[in-house]
Length: 89
Image: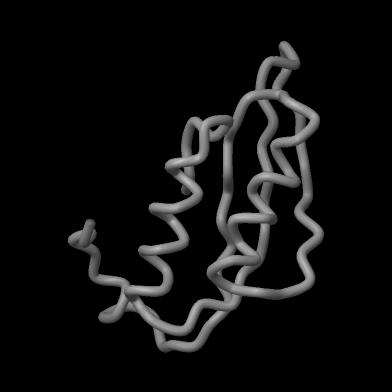
């Protein structure tokens, strides 16, 4: 699925992009997201994790080197499709 973004107009690739991932407060959320990232942008990731005030959700911030608009959109789409993930920014 092609996303209609203008990342190529506002960013110079390759660059680092921080993906913020909000998902269910499940112990495996971080592992699932990192596993997905390893498939599309192999690297050494150590996301910062914050818990929501009620403890139902976790927010992960992870910095990823992206090489193109398509690469960035693919990562966004793949992470968004994970069962435990609710939003990706």
